[in-house]
Length: 103
Image 1 (cartoon, rainbow, N blue to C red):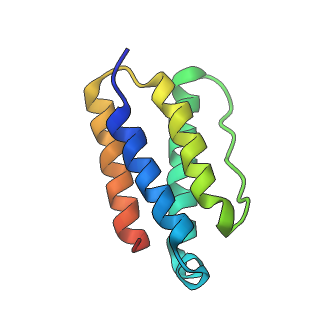
Image 2 (cartoon, rainbow, N blue to C red; image 1 turned 180 degrees about the vertical axis):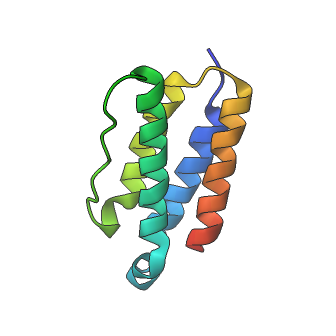
């Protein structure tokens, strides 16, 4: 089993910053950026778990749920990652999304 601590910590930090962000920042794109990352992670996990299945898109639960959505998605992804390279790729995606979100 691969150690995904770095990934979950990165997402927890991003989620905490989103929860602390003012509504105006969430409306200017931070929440959409988080939802996009959550959807990307959810699809990644689905493809690993069921490569032939029809992927399901994570719904938009609203800007105030975006932090929870990335947290749930990363925990699902962490279960299926098989090597350190995948973990590092995911950590990089979190860093990029957080930078674009401005939080």
